[in-house]
Length: 100
Image (cartoon, rainbow, N blue to C red):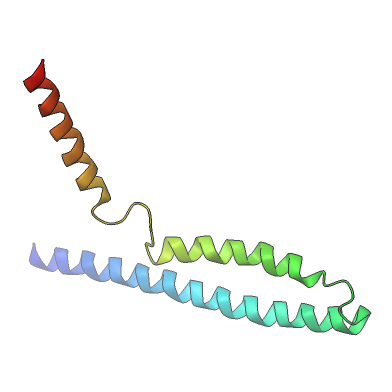
């Protein structure tokens, strides 16, 4: 039974490392392609119309949401948010019953 738990932990850690690796690969490709598009934009019209920023903005939004998912970043609903809300609602329910 203990070996099975270790195997599950290993597989979960391996999956997480794969997600992080994928994120950093995506960021690296983002930098390379946006730099190439900026160079092309400069070559074509010397940045009078910086159209490469549209691609940078769109792809950047995707990278932002991937980072949120990969690093489990939830600024508004942190790790203890759910437990705190459950306790709050239970206390509110208890207070209602006392006054009714």
